Image 1 (cartoon, one colour):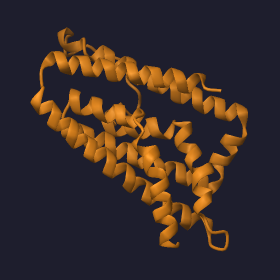
Image 2: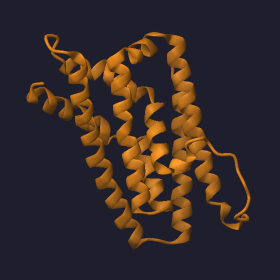
Image 3: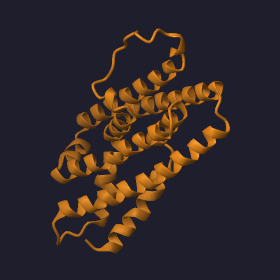
Length: 208
């Protein structure tokens, strides 16, 4: 694949990546409520999302979903409900300090993956992330060459942009946390992150 197309795609995808959204909020919350390593795991999960969307696009599933009103509505609804679930869980976690350690609560199958699973699934279930591979990626493909390898190359470039941005942001939040680390601030930031995720979930689930 021609490198000027890859660089052009990276230039186009960077502003979209920098816009604060689900991944940005998740990484922030993971660092504040946990540690820098928790933020790194959420970053890696978010960065793997484009690889899933690229795979779907290469085999045509993304086009099928985006062309079907019912399928797209279902994806938006499921993605929105998942974000709402994450937000409510984060909000409740700020009050769990007084609960017995042995108390059991219902968990999603991938909860054991921690921040990585949250980052991955919030990206996979994001219809806006999927639309990148149907609206933006085709503009950088060459019809005279095999499509799948080109999509794979652009996906790797996308992952690189996401990784750089979120890892930098992880370091920034970790440094800020060291300077202002108090239980009250951690609870407040976790609740704010939870509220943002709930708002994003409602917007995603109800988007027309």
